[in-house]
Image 1 (cartoon, rainbow, N blue to C red):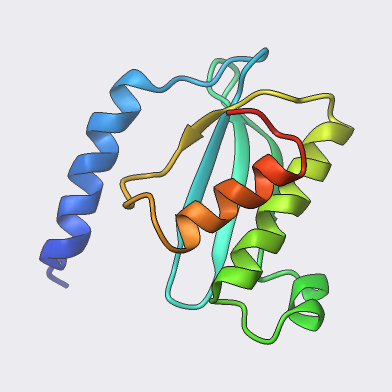
Image 2 (image 1 turned 45 degrees about the vertical axis):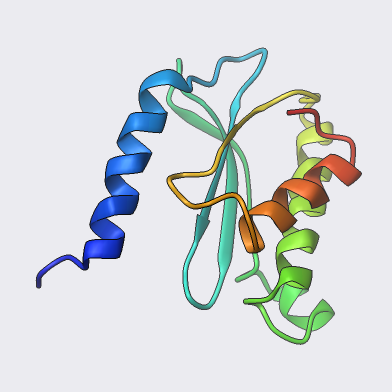
Length: 121
């Protein structure tokens, strides 16, 4: 199946961004992925290649709290929840990886939600 031009451009931007962004144990990478239905976030230590914390709007607890899993409210809630889970792992500062997406809409909402909950970028 042929890759769409928009997706191909996003992947090119993603590879350029990932050349300079590296998550360490002290400051892991906060990676975001959005699909048409859900939004996913994870905090990754790139040196050990381990996912420390993950969260998504696909989880049952989010589906009951929000009207839709694809809007700004769901993204903000996912951002707050991943920040709370990161605090449980004693992570306070991260490097934000927008994964090639533009910094607006749901990507901005998840970042703002994480900042509100105390995560530093």
